[in-house]
Image (cartoon, rainbow, N blue to C red; front, side):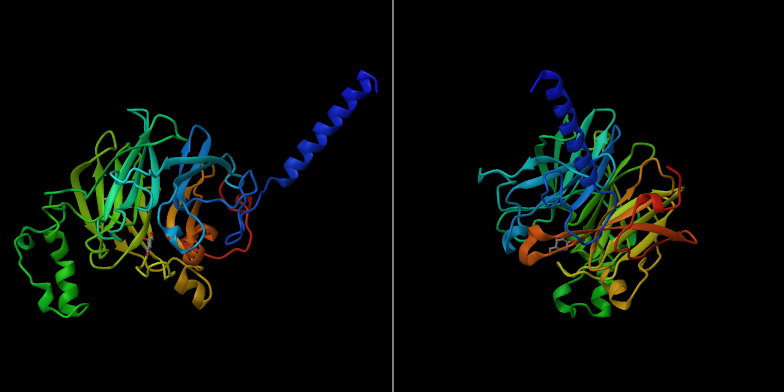
Length: 383
Ligand code: DGJ
């Protein structure tokens, strides 16, 4: 075959390849279905969040393994990248657990709900995550932090803390700071017991060692101030805490929010001049009815808006068999937000699915409905 024919053949082969590749590129969201990455492997980034940086979305989440032990960290935090939110490139494990048994991120610890934010001043990517120590279940209730100069890592683990040690919340009354209560003498979950929880019995207990931090998310406001939002006080109350200018520590300025309401899986986002929170109740790996709330400032006061879900009784009660993890503002498409939820499969953690649904607003209240399949272009709001 002469060189001319070879050239024609090669051009045709490349064209066929490109055509096939384009045809394989997805252009729809299919909540609950397997979601293959660029290698055809179901995305493995659970309980995650997304950072938009220099025109690309980066999805960070818990890498799960097969089987029931998959809810422990045997690998670390996985990262994927995308420019269209449908098709994701595997960027690999960006924070790895270690074999070193003296390390707090030793293989077999618990790393959950990793979120990454970018500090424009230090030019560092900062990851915070819910961290539980190996062999201690969920007792430690710490939050860990890792940093990288590159969005896709590798991230270097710095420390884990119980936040705001020695600091009272900005919205905690002086009259309750010295209150003494023996909770062992009160029937658990009784009205009296719940009142003492709202009045800060666990907050006072943890003042010396630092507060509990379990399910968490991060939020960076328009002015660059970063907030670490986490379930605290035995998961009874959310703490919304300001991070330092380098995003690597807590300033000690924080508030209690939705006291005693047992919120987990917080996802905070801003729409116009309002701050919204979508969260879940506390039922382990089982889904429950989502909650929503609104405020004029991250420090609140927060007003409950109720369950944002519309649909059948089961859909409303289980948030479409999912639990919130993040709310993604779609870049370049005004007033467009995506609810990101996890459909956990603890019996085989690696099979966990992703429930991404558009958030609509009715009288400024977030509303989430089910779609078997949907596309960004079908939503209002101009690209
Ligand atoms: C619910 C939380 O949202 C998850 O992150 C995880 O901690 C499970 N509880 C563990 O039961």
